[in-house]
Image (cartoon, rainbow, N blue to C red; front, side, top):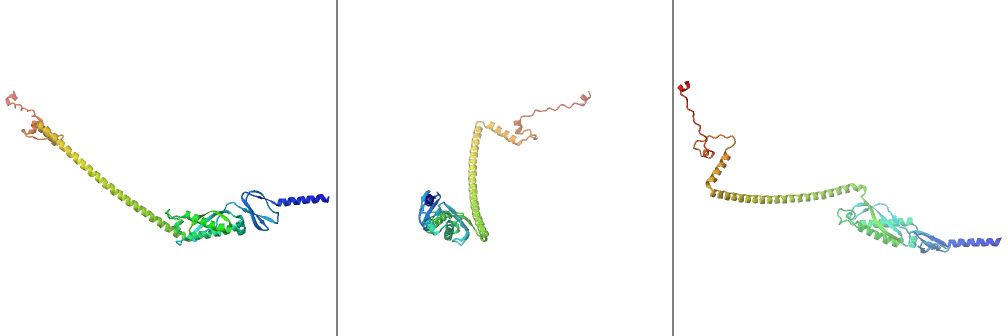
Length: 306
């Protein structure tokens, strides 16, 4: 009975030993095989792999997924001595697992040290640029995109050298003013906007005056040209009328004189007008001689009695 038990125990021990030599690697992780506690190799291919059993080889699993670091918001001083509250974020992942484990040990420690690097580099960049590079009404003065790229490069360089971390991007996420400076900043911004608005109004008024002056000048030119043309047409009409009158007078002077006389009378006489004319008035020749009324003979006394 003892011999079969030994075989069973031996087979079980062999199976446990073989099982301890196998380990599984997931898609989103890297596995460091540490021999007697010293990291010796990295397995990144997903699936089953081999190692020496414990305690010869031990496993350290490192998450390779991209992580987002959101450091605390801090107050910085820009190149033109303006206080500003800035918050940024950093997207990062483990690039070299062995260097990462030796320098940072775990993700929490790595994020804390990476946050210190990010905040330090952010302060260096903001201290070398004026406030207008972050926020400005003039597009030519804004350099926020350039600052983001520079921040990414600076953090990536130090993170790779110190921790074996790959920084995908770093961006300034939020800008704000300290509470004690907000009112003064807002007043200055309002004053700047009022100044810009006044300049725009002045330019508009100047343009309006220029347009009115041009319109007045053009109108005067048009009116003068119209008056000139009207005078020319009137002169031509009067000349033509004079010519026609001359031709008419030359063809029949007596008839023309008669018509002119009638026109004068038409203008002089109105409706229901009464005129007392002498018997030899030329007007009577035009109007015609009225019928003469003969006076009746006065009856004599004898005739009236008879």
